[in-house]
Length: 135
Image (cartoon, helix red, strand yellow):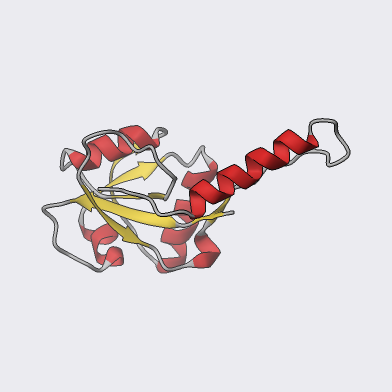
């Protein structure tokens, strides 16, 4: 299941070009120690963007709070809700399927637990594909 990248920015910023935002605004980086952070790093390198790094953070929740407080912009995987309560962000999707994070479940199909695991996978897929209410 693909989880595309997303630029999040404070609502006060009006720039629509995500690459301009990433190059000019203070950048809150998802830690390169994470799979999502490495994906972000590959995107930035491919696009030739050298961000003005302010923080490098492991927690997506912390990043959304920092952006909400106006401390910079971030490029993160677009994860399904719940997002932190009360955050107001501009969300700009990255239209680049090759930079989407792939989320999946590995399990033995011959296991006695295969039925419940498959039910979980189907439910998670439905939630991820459904309409999401976000700020």
